[in-house]
Image 1 (cartoon, rainbow, N blue to C red):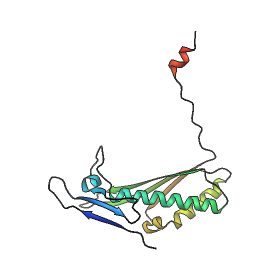
Image 2 (cartoon, helix red, strand yellow):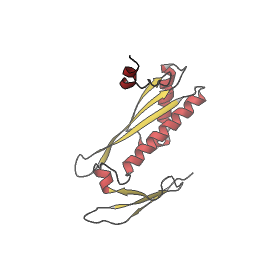
Image 3 (cartoon, rainbow, N blue to C red):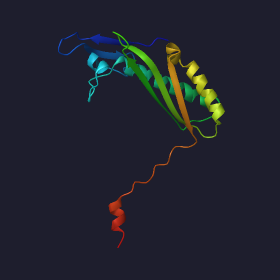
Image 4 (cartoon, rainbow, N blue to C red):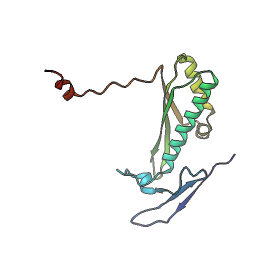
Length: 165
């Protein structure tokens, strides 16, 4: 199995910097813009993606898939698995490097003990292809809920006071 992407740089301009577009084999990303500015500077309205954001997306989706599949194989149906991945860039000297990858996952899995849940989490972390490629610099934290939270009804003070007569 082979997965791929093509990045095309439109060159470097002293006023704009290096930029280009990214297209994946599946077409999930098609001519998606990227730039050094999007990579190393905070933009209130990002003009494109960057390799670290794509790595975070790969880590989040890989861990979510692995955990959900392993829970199902163990006979536990997750109502929801939500994973956030953060790729931390640091510049200890004259070049940028990835200092850490942190993954936080919250899963709603009724009827599983915390011990079994954590054992499955460790299996998922150890077996995910993206996590394996980055080993050992991936930190995973998790929390488990028995049920999805029930949304509190919105209150409207104006409505409440209108009913007081």
